[in-house]
Image 1 (cartoon, one colour):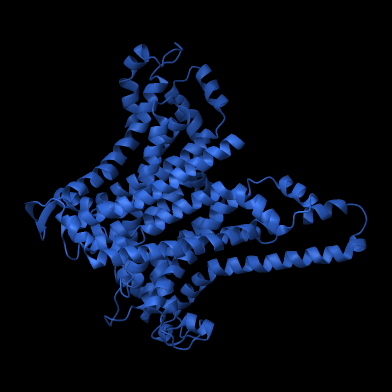
Image 2 (cartoon, each protein chain N blue to C red):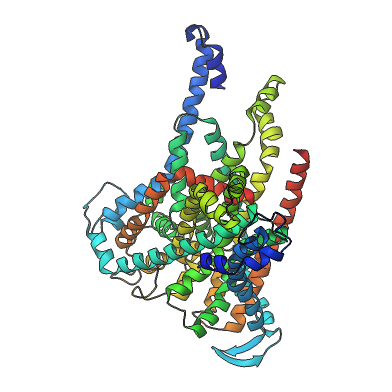
Length: 313
Length: 298
């Protein structure tokens, strides 16, 4: 365990290390301790996140038949991936899914958050209820909404008076159903994040705006939105990156039928169903670059936002 | 705003400002009604799930009416005939080990980042943020190859190792926030009393951070418990070995191959969700604090 290591090894760094400016510090110096404490986390993330990604890149340059290694392939796997209609179809679905679901989640989540920030009666119980969709596993949400939209028993149809409408049998509507299930599960979560942001806005700003004659819409547009910007951007960042990874919902609800195959689903297929480590790794590397790229764009945007916010405050 | 009105009316009776009063009251009711919409949004599907799981024979498929029976617990019996208890065991073990590993490794790192002098802190935080943006699917082909060689497919290790490394960034963000919020003076005082930095961490800081650590633990557990992509790839089949709950729920088969067995699936879903909802409600304040700390730090 870490404890025994610390007790035996540390005397040397504390004696000579520059961290030991205060001589009364016994045991490990603070610097030594810092390094020791972050080491396991760094090692694990390098070993099980960074290394596999690099390894995937190496494998993506090799040719395979089935699982049999056949030698160096250069960029052949990438050529195959980029000329594969399946890849482009899944890219399109993933982007459509991400843009629509994140937009809807943001609008609905913001509505929920504003409401919960204002209302007094029933606020506690709603805050508790909002955790329920978050805690329900996505696979369960997928099965649940699959059955609710299915023709039998036809719960949604009964609710909307639609008779025997086959939501899960028509290309466009299947996508809408998958997106809806995602919005149901994550809009409350977005609401939680935005509510936390709303609660940091001091109420006296609103009071003085009211005194100056600003109406509710003006107060929302000129006070709430700008001050909520950091929270909004953080929520959008996490939701976007997560939506781009989508796998559970379409995998369980449609198994990819009606053009609802996501990038993650396509990659996963070349690992298990039709194994091709080279092509699979090429696809996973492409997916990695796309998703991390979107994330990095967001973060650099966010970084600038937050620094501006800091110089203001 | 109703607080402001109440303030001006502290003395006399409210009758004099009846009109204003009823307008505010009307708006308060409208807000409560809208809150009820949120409430239904979150809870109605769960209610549907429970009612459907209790319908036996074909009644779940025949009618959308939630109150039309026959009702019974037969579906729950079927679920456990399909070895669902083994899936629960696997999920508990994998999510439990992930939680312990993440909390231990994450609180050490979080404390070091929040409190200890560390070179390249910005670089480290950027790296952690980058890992939190990694799409898990990028790990699926390479880890599959590696696990195949190392014999880690269909094992607990094959799942909790990647889960730990993926959940670690969020854990570190949450815990760094919590550690940074603990007053520095307490630590200084411990040091003046002659405690080493290590002792100061263990005896003073860690107990104070316990609520934050607990919140982080719940969030880690939930995300490991819900994971599907890696579980479905690395341990897709055998409940005896390492098949987890979400994988089992996605694969339940009924008498007819084409039809998903609605009763069994919903019953399994209820078995899984009820304890999780109870935990979420019992610790909601801490979970919310953890979730918002983790993301606002981002």
